Amino acid sequence: MACMLALGLVLATQSPFQGDLVFRNVRPTMGLLGPERRERDSFLPGDLVFYAFDLGNLTATREGNSEGLYRYAMTVEILDGKNQVIFPKEPAKPRESQAFCPLGGDMLPTFAYTETDQDIPPGKYVMRLNCIDRNSNKRGTLEKPFTIENKRFGILRTAMLYATGGEPAPAMGAPGQSFLLTFVVANFTVDPKTENCDVDLAIQILDQAGKPVSPKSFRGQITTPEDPSRRLHSIRFPFQPNRAGQYTLEVTATDRKSDGKTVTKVTYPFQVMTSR
Figure 1: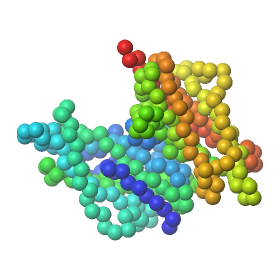
Figure 2 (figure 1 turned 180 degrees about the vertical axis):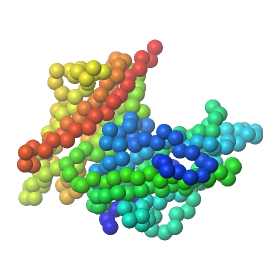
Figure 3 (figure 1 turned 60 degrees about the vertical axis):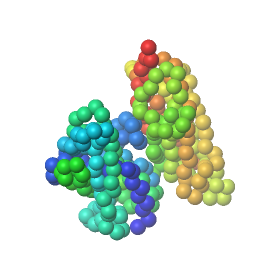
Figure 4 (figure 1 turned 90 degrees about the vertical axis):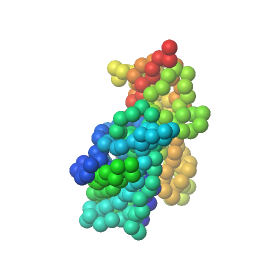
């Protein structure tokens, strides 16, 4: 099976779970620190399957300069609809991690992601996680089912980055900061002779009431895809908020070479807080 899976530093799942460790507030997000996905647990081939969650009931160190240090190990398996492990190919070894959390408590916010290939077959999958708390030897196992849809024209891997360094940014900021809304347009029609396409892009910013903040949307066009064989093109949209409020960045893509001018849309909520 042609399927590539890339794993983050911490991988996670959702109930049902077993063991002393608990997994709270598990939700699919639009990248690291991003908002929750509307599509929940359903993803297109080639998308980033990303979950954020809180790992609870951990025990922190209590001595000296290392007070508040969590030490833990995790392994992950990806199972197909037949409950067969498709990743990793060899038995997984625990990955050792640690996090310094000086605010106290027994909870660690963390995340999980799986990067899928465009050729992954549609169907039901499960991300299975085994976790060990190295400070207390508590253990927990969690399984998170997700679905891969049939391949179609769509917008993948939507996320927000800081414009200055390219690091992941949360879905909030202050006036004067600079961000990049990034996404990938996939599976559009490509002319087999010229390798050209005709995808219209429109980005509209809406206020809290759902009304456009500007009478005109920001528009663009993809005519030469960066990867014509895979029918992929990545976009970076600069976003520099200048006033506080709750906004939504709405991206609409239209494949003008397809029959019926196929349209796809994604929305990204963003809160701008006053810096004073």
